[in-house]
Length: 127
Image (cartoon, rainbow, N blue to C red; front, side):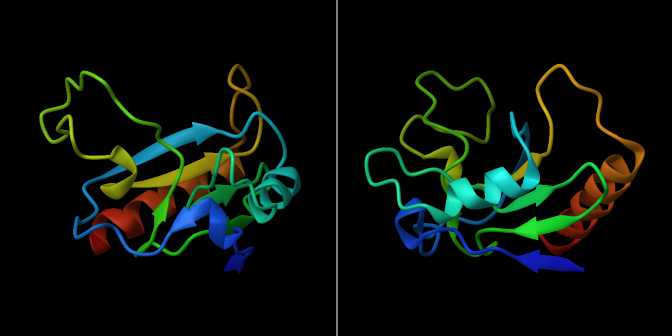
């Protein structure tokens, strides 16, 4: 079951500017599941930040932004090499962001990997 932890409305955009979901970007949180949820709930007008989902080390799953909306997780790409990404298309409009509890050099836990795999499978089936 996915626990809803809505991000502040300043930290994401309603809709996807007419684009559809084409990819999933998988991140490490550089922190905890609880801390990340709290961070996304704080309005950040100077640098809005969010993701669609968060997965904890114990397999707990949070959703911060609805799939139909644009989370700010991927940044802007200057010279994309991915053929589905074009210079004038914000990658956030066409991707879903999944954050994993922990730090970049840490291994993800077995419950975390199981939940991540299951979530990616569901999203790939839907989109």
